[in-house]
Image (cartoon, rainbow, N blue to C red; front, side):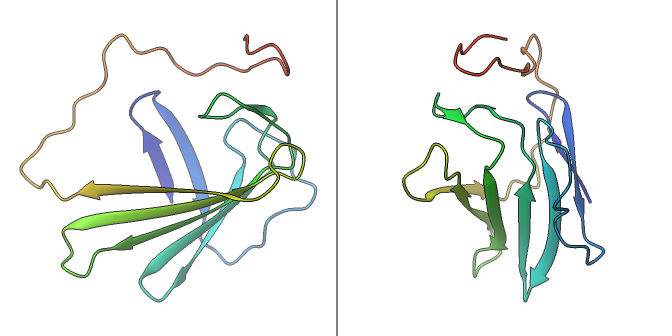
Length: 128
């Protein structure tokens, strides 16, 4: 499965073929993701994420792991996401982030204009 992030025109591959996370996978900007279904919930495990700066402006290591859980609300009108992030180097305990999207079948998605794409960061500087 491929996820496309419109803000940065980034594409992420999630393998749904039963493979396990690779222990020797070299780190990349978006990591290595494998997924499976637990009932109606899509569970994605991501590892081998390159060290860098997190969304909350903190440093992370290449030991970062994330487990995402995508499900629909009981009425089918919302997509629910819960992400548990772990990084023994930078986090004292796991961080859980939640997000909800509302169903909007009559809306059209347009590309972002004049957005900066993420760049690689040099550890400790916050600079590309």
